[in-house]
Amino acid sequence: MTRPRDPQQDPELERALELVTRPTARPEFRAALRERFLAGAVESGPGASSRERPAHDAAPRRAERGPRRGRLVLLAGALATAAAVVLTVFLNRTRPAVWTVLDGTSATSVVVDGRALDAADRAVLAAALVSAREVEVRGGALRVRVRDEALLELSDGTRLSQMQLAAVGPYHLRTDHGSLAVATMPAFGQRGMRILTEDFAVSVTGTRFAVDVDEHGSCVCCLSGTLACTPATAQAPKPVPAGQRCFTARDRSPSDWGPAHAEHLRPVEQLPE
Image 1: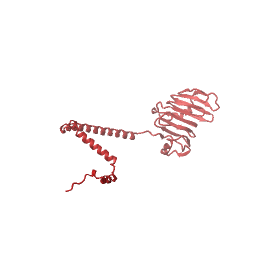
Image 2 (image 1 turned 90 degrees about the vertical axis):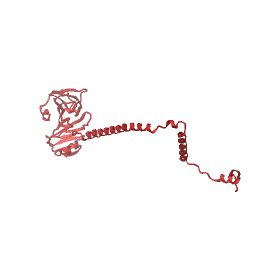
Image 3 (image 1 turned 120 degrees about the vertical axis):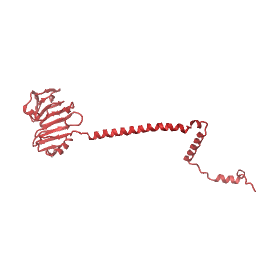
Image 4 (image 1 turned 30 degrees about the vertical axis):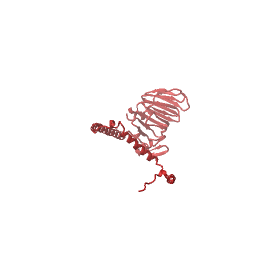
């Protein structure tokens, strides 16, 4: 039998092998091969036996982790349930209506931001007042409650503007014409209220009062509590105690301070306590 010749001793075979294209191993194949090589080296290394734990040693540790993991799962479930209960209570809590049209309303219509609404449809009117900036009452009086914090009564022909009665911060509005009666409620707290007219500014922290505006000027009468009034011609406010008034004329003559007008306070007295 003839023994095959060593390829390295055959020059023609060597040249043929050089001409053959050798495929290049893909990077992921080389990386996987390297990982297998290193893993084998670690397992066969001198410290491999010391890192291996007997089966009877691992079992108790798994047993210890089991109850602990169970307690964590129960705790997480309890916290999730408590959070769900709190969220449900928050979403379903009773909230006072922003505006409520009350008995004692005799107006036929209320113009809210230029749109005339039937005062008899209280739900529609109350919804429109939430975002109102201007209100004018026609055909009678409008009596409303704001957030269980204040009662307002607007007489026939009264017009309010620049209304800002947000959930947070002082109430703000301007009486352009007519008669506005106000009675703050206990929930009003120290929120504060600022009422402007063409003739003065009134600051309120909790009281019962009336603001009347006509072509001659503006008058504020206090039934209870204390107001601070700043006439347009003054630099600093002056208190208006219970039973007193401040009248500021449109011609900017000196303001008149004296006893409150009984007819101005009558609508305030009729507001619920």
